[in-house]
Amino acid sequence: MQIKTTPDSCFNNISDYQYQANYIRVSDTEGGFMNLHYIDEGPKDGEIILLLHGEPSWGYLYRKMLPPLVNKGYRIVVPDLIGFGKSDKPIKRSDYTYQRHLDWIRQIPLQLSLKDITLVCQDWGGLLGLRLVAEHPDLFARVMAANTMLPTGDQTPSDAFLKWQKFSQEVEVFPVSGVIKGATVTKLPTSVLAAYDAPFPHESYKAGVRQFPLLVPTHPSDPQSANNRLAWKNLQKFNKPFLTAFSDTDPVTAGGDKIIQKLIPGCNGQKHTTIKNGGHFLQEDQGGSLVKVLLDFMSSNPITHT
Image (cartoon, rainbow, N blue to C red; front, side, top):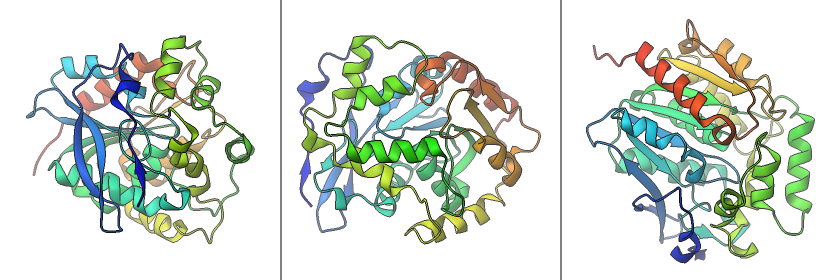
């Protein structure tokens, strides 16, 4: 598999994301290996919070949430999906599949021996993270889902998603920071927009960004539809605390929280919330509010071992 690695120099001017870079090696499924980047902050013996980003962002999306969570004594692990951030980037779009992404990100909890994980997932962070919860429920203590879903292709996607999918394939130069800007409700500084563009100094680095919208199951015969249906069967047995914290102005995932609340038993009795004045990337718009919701969720549902 041919890969590209974004030069470190591309990240030199990002002033608000100065964390030590860590890497694990993951198989490219073709006899080689790639480097998957993650940050690992806070005490090693602290309760673990795993923050999963989506498309076309990277771990930088969670920068506002990191300091207050670390200050509370939690261990925060934030990976960059393969093809994003500081992780390696296969250059062929055909190298990106839903299953490969799942197998690559699965290596984070497995190689780092993480357990009693509190998962926070948004966008593709949920398409991958909820599959992990379904397949490895014993690794997870709590889940907070924000603006995400686990689609099976059995329901017609929203018009907003279909428009996004069409745009992502037809636009000549994929505007990474422009997508972030268009899916937030607050005005983002030039420096923040530059940070979202940093992993992609050229179109040749954007194969994953381009392919991700096509990997979402949109019809019943999609390659991962059956696996996602099976995952839902497992999630319907997940009794550990599960919270939805969707924003109020995201047309792509609107209503998904109600479906999750209905189907996953761990949602029962939780203080589900709608984050006000938040777009699709609510970590940008309301990172502080999301932290408060997360901390309350965790303190209200302490980890117990029987």
